[in-house]
Length: 367
Ligand code: GN1
Ligand code: MG
Image 1 (cartoon, rainbow, N blue to C red):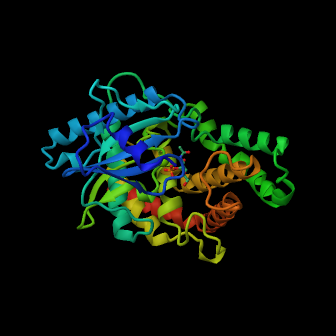
Image 2 (image 1 turned 120 degrees about the vertical axis):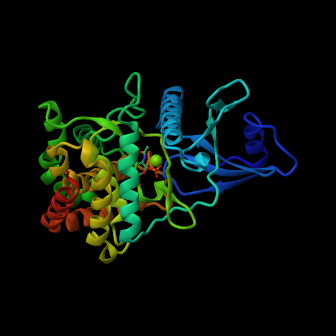
Image 3 (image 1 turned 180 degrees about the vertical axis):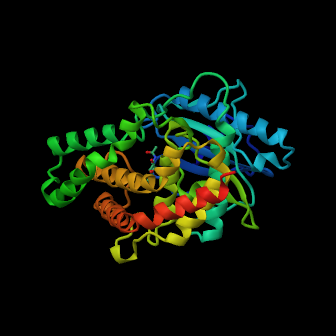
C-alpha cells in the first residue's frame, strides 16, 4: 500500500492540491485499489489500476472515456439534470492524459466522486427491480455506441471454454499442491462443464449475439441516492462485448444470494427468488425491446453460468496459489469457491421456477 505522501503526489499529477488535501482508502474491490480524495470542496476517487490484470491501460481508459461520453450525451439528450452524479467522469491530467504512470510502474486514474450516494451488498426486491431497469438501460444506451467495437480489456473474460482451459491447466500443473484437497469440487465442475459451454456453442452457430455489456454487474456496482433511486452504474473496467445472459447472471449471483459471496457458513447461502423476480422484471421491462427469444430463454441459465464461472475462477486461483484475487486470509479463495458452489446448487434446484419467472416477465412487457 502506498503511503499518504506518495498518494498526494499522485493526485497532484491530475489536479492542483489545496492545503487540506486528504486521501483515504475506499471500497472493497477484489482487483484495483481505490482511495477517496478530498481537495478543498471537491471530492474524487483515485484508483491504482491493477496492471497485472488489465494489461493494456491505454485501451482500458479509452474504453471508459468512450462509454462515459456516450452515456453523458444520451443523458443530455433526455434532458437529465445533475449529470455528474449519473455517469462517471474521468479527470484527465493537465496534458489531457487519461492515466498517470508513476516511477514504480503503477498506473493511476482519477474520477469525480459521486456525492450523496451509496451502494448495497444486500438489497430487497424493490431495489433489485430498480437495478434491473438500470442495467437494462445501460445496455440500451450503449447499443448504438459509434465506431469500432470496444477493446476486450481482459481477453475471453466471460468465455467459459477459456475459463475451463485455465482451470484444467491449473489442475494439471498443481503448482502449490492443492488439487488433492479439492478433488471433489473438481469432479463437480467437470460434471457440468459441457452444459456450461452452451453460450459459446450458440454464438458459433450464429444464435446468440454479443452486445456491449458491463461484465461486472455486481450488486454493489450500482449507486443509489438518498431516496434509493438509482444514480448510476460504476466500475466500467470490463465494459466490452459479451452475452446479455452474463450481465443478468452476475447480478443474480451477487444480489440474489441470501449469504455473502465468501460466506463461511454454507447454510446462509441460497437464491432469494423474490429478488430474482424483482431484477428479472426490471431488466425485462427495459431490455425486452432489443432481446431475442434465445436471449430471454437463457437469462435464468445465465445465473447458473456466472455462479459456476465464479466457482471455477475462485478455485483456479486457489489451485494456482492465490495470484489473481486479493485475499484476506489463506483459505479465502477456497471458502469463496464453496460458497459459490452452494449457490450454484440452489440455483439448480430452483431453475424451473426461475425460468417461469423470466417467461412471465417477458410476456408482461412484450408489446
Ligand atoms: C472482481 O474488482 P471487482 O471486485 O469488481 C472480478 C469479477 C468477479 C468479482 C468477484 C476484473 O470484481 O470478474 O466477478 O471480482 N473482476 C475482474 O467478486 O476479474
Ligand atoms: Mg470490477
